[in-house]
Image (cartoon, rainbow, N blue to C red; front, side, top):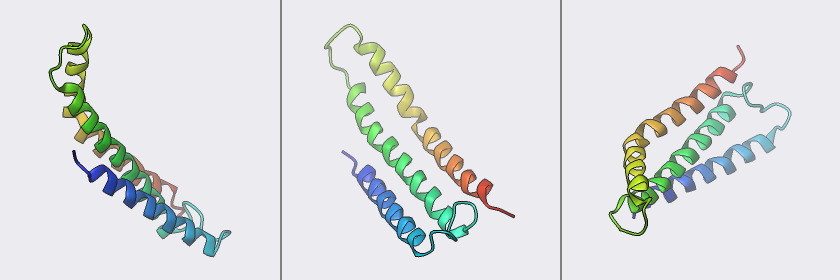
Length: 109
């Protein structure tokens, strides 16, 4: 199994610790949308967290898509697992774009 999900999840946790510590240095001055670095760290942490979840889910879907005759719903599960495996890249891309747009949109002019 892939350990990319653990690496990305660990990176998201590290970024969460970094932006929390950065915020503690000046709680009233470092706000989402007001501080560029803080906003970027928050959005990167959220992006990496969601991509890590998608990577973990991919391993589970690969397991579900294997042909095993267990019950009558197995073909249905296999079909949808294969569809979601094909869409996984698009879902991850959408997550990253959405959270990168978040921090750009919250920046004050």
